[in-house]
Amino acid sequence: YGRICPYQDSAHFDTNGKNLANSDEDAFVLHRGAAATVPGEDCLRVNVWTPEINASHKRPVMVYMHGGGFSAGSGHDLLSYDGESLARNHDAVVVNHNHRLNVYGYLNLGHLGGEEYASSANVGMLDLVAVLEWVRDNITTFGGHPGSVTIFGQSGGGGKVLALMAMPAAKGLFHRAIVQSGPFLKSLSTDYSGRLAELLLAELGLSKSQLSELQVIPVDRLSGAAAEAMKKMPRPKSSLRRVYGEYDWGPTVDGLILPRHPFDPGAPQISADVPLLTGTDLHEGVSGLDRPDANAMGVEELNRLVKEEIGDGSQTIIDAYRRDYPKATPFDLYAIIAAAPFRRAAFEQAIRKAALGSAPAYSYIYSWRTPVLDNRPGSFHACEIAFTFDNAEICDHYSGGTPEAFVLSKQISTAWMNFARTGNPNHDGLPHWPAYTSERRATMYFDTPCAVRNNPEGEGLRLIAQS
Image 1 (cartoon, rainbow, N blue to C red):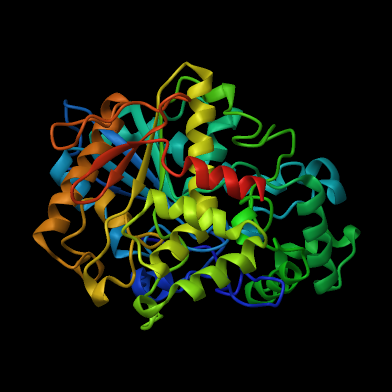
Image 2 (cartoon, rainbow, N blue to C red; image 1 turned 180 degrees about the horizontal axis):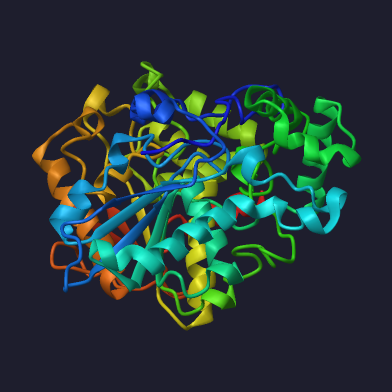
């Protein structure tokens, strides 16, 4: 699979230095093999799955952007990333890749080094443009159609999709876009990323006249200094009011490579003709995987936890969410409320895209609960990936390997592939899925059975925004 960009698992910290990595994703989903442990800065690689090369019949192309924020991960971290089932079962060409991340891909030195470093804040995104250019120029050899390219990504990969939608250099290189649990509306400001670069130089004892020395600093030292610099940057105080994309390593709105925020104040006009499918998992970031007592949580603890986040008005918010999810246990309800920023961002992406009126947007929530570990993990962050790749069978360690899981995997992967082919995810195995509008706000709940709900969590999200 090729080298991966060097990174430290401790790249994400809160104000107390506590690691913010999702414990469910790290402990339950990641299956790193030997190939995933070979780091190197020369890491731009693509991997291709195809049913047939040099075919006269050209297939839709699915280009996957891996998660890990913009700081970590690779195109082969997860067993669920394997593209064989999606290519074989749905007659498609699947591409994933590795590229520069964290300090290697997003170190903003433009204000310190002048023209030579003008694009330094976004070279990680330029790697993705290079991947898409490679697909345009070469995918025909692998039986793919360069005029039918869909980019899709989960978590940080979803953020990469959103950023590409706002980049002039990426215009015309893809034709449809899917964002899975990518809660990004904004990217970094030059003030933020510039300050982070200054802290990094201070950690290394370098002045702005010594920028060229960054090229020869050993990887371990550079990665360690980057992690220390990140700890000194301000962190969001409340997860329920959190606006993702405004901290950490990531793309910078530099006026050059990324002229504007990806989806703020609206969807980018430059990709107005690109249909969008966007959504989240119901229990993002809060899982019962490492909480054997999750199902024992009572109403008092639920009230306490939400009040710690919101303060006054927390009970009104809990009541609103209980009306939306009347069968939820106290722990379920806490997890759903705690994951509200993900759904808020996804709904905003859909409504802002729909407002352009040039291409449809579709909204979903993945709410199916894995049966393993007494259902405790719920619909956790990254759990839908195996289903979008039609990999529920090879990922039976968390899908449960049940007939129910296999049916849902076919429903979701077929929806993704129909969207890739036509810009419309509907198929006979699902209820009718209307495009998102400001009036109806139709959202597909992937569950057993699947169902469409209009304006889900409308009251709860409004109350959180006002709190």
